[in-house]
Image 1 (tube, rainbow, N blue to C red):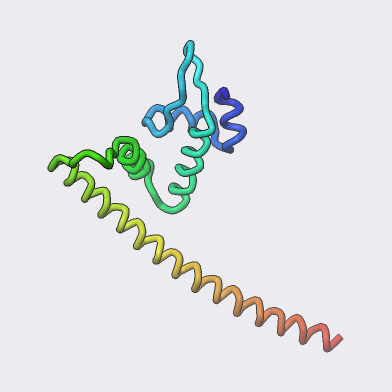
Image 2 (image 1 turned 135 degrees about the vertical axis):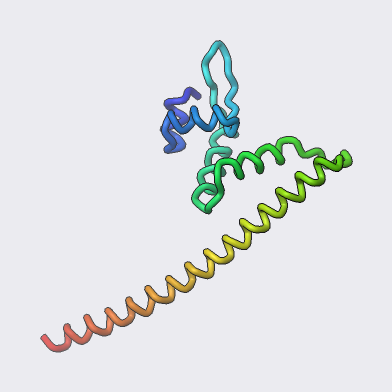
Length: 131
C-alpha cells in the first residue's frame, strides 16, 4: 500500500511516517522510487505508538527494534554484544519499573474518582429527595 493509505489506516501523518523511515524505525519496501507498506509495517507502527504512549523515547524504541532484528538465538554473544544486551536489559527493566509505578498511580486515581462519584451520587440523590 502507498503512504497515503498507510497513513489513513494507521492514523499517523505522512510526515511522521517519513521521519520514522529516516531514523530507520520503519523500513518499507521500495520499488521504482515508491514506498510499499505491508501489514508488518502496520504492526510495527502500532507497537511504536503503544511504546511512545507508555514513555519510551524513539531512541529506546529503535534500540528495541534493532535488538529484535539482529538477535540470533543459536550463536554465542561477543563481549561487546553481551555488554550492549546488558545495557538494553537494564533500560527495559527500568521502563518496567516505571510502568508498575504508573499502574499504581492509575489505581489510586481510579479510587479517588470512584469515591468522588459515590459522594456526588449521594448528594444528587439527596437533592432529588428534597424536591
